[in-house]
Structure formats: structure tokens, C-alpha cells
Length: 225
Image 1 (tube, one colour):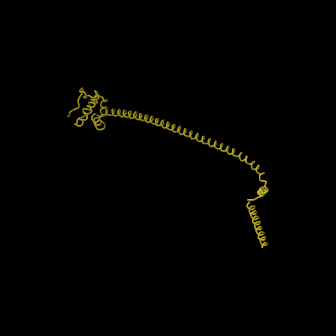
Image 2 (cartoon, one colour):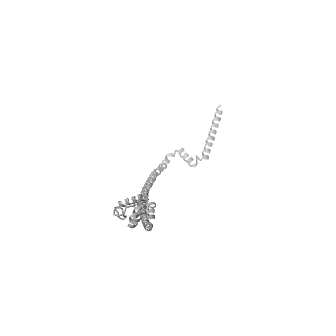
Image 3 (cartoon, helix red, strand yellow):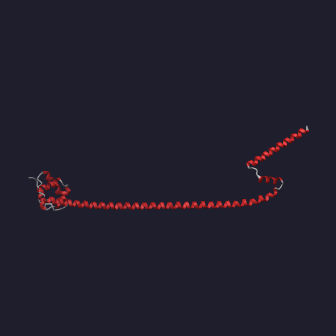
């Protein structure tokens, strides 16, 4: 009975040995256990772990030294960001100022262009008026010359049928007195007499004595026959 118990213990010991060996092999194979770690475990098992504390303590200042370095980098990064934001703000302000100046320049140029166009339009309008006036004057002179040379009856018909009454008034006022008398005497029909009567009345409104019979100093328009 006791012999069997020893055999059982031996079997359990071998199983544990194989299990530990398998575990160690697995750790070596997976890279979780290496010579350095085995050495560290041996040091701990020998009771020498207090001697390793100074080394660990020696590494702590290095870690503390790294923290200020990280803080310095953060400060530098923060400063760079601040400078970048300031540069962007300055650029934005400059762009707004340039845009405002451009808008004002465009408005000024547009206003100057409109004023120039308006002056040009006024000049053209004045030139047109001068040309029209000269044309009217030239046409008036040609009509006056033509009517002064035309037979009185034909001149009367032209004045009555082809020329507006205000223009006929001006033409008669510019004609020779004898010529006006001849045109008046050519008015034989009733409608001719009515027409020349209106013309003489309008001439009378101008207060001119150019046409005889207007103010009673000359002959009246014929009253028939």
C-alpha cells in the first residue's frame, strides 16, 4: 500500500515536471520568456532583488527629465499655433481692407464713367440742336427764296397747302412788302381768304408792320370778286 503511494507521488512529480517544462518551452517559443528575464527571476529567487532598486530608482530621474521636455514641446507648439492664428487674422484683415479699397475704386471709376457719358450725351444733344437749328434756318432761307421768286398765286397755294401756318407767318414777315401784297391779292376763294385772315391775325400778334394790311396801314385782304 505504501509502495503504491510512492509510485503515485512519483507519477505526479513527473507530470508536474513535464508541465513546467512545457510551459517554459511555450514561453520561450512565444517570446514572453528570454535569457534576461530568466536572469531577473534567478536574482529574485536568490533574494537579491533589493540591489536592483537603485537601478530602478536611477531610471526614474530620466523619466522625470522627459516630462519637462514634453512640456517645452507643447509650449512651442502652442506658440506656433498662436503665431499661425495671428498671421491668419492679419491676412484676413488685409484682404478685407484690399477688398474695400477695390470696391471704392470701382465705385469711383463707375461714377466718373457715368459723368463722362452724361457730358458726352449733353454735348451730342447740343450739337444736334445746333445742327437742327442750322438746318431749319437753311431750309427757311431756301423756302423764302423760292416763294419770293414764285408766281404769287402759286406761292399762296404753297404757303397754304404745303407749309404749316406758324412757318407761313414767319415767311410772310420776312418777305418784301410788295410780294406780300401780291400773295394777299391772290386769295380769291373763300377758304383762301379765311386762311390769309388767320395768317394776318397771327402776324398782327407779333406787332410787326412787315405785312401790309395787318395793322390797318396797308391794304386788307380782298373780300371777293
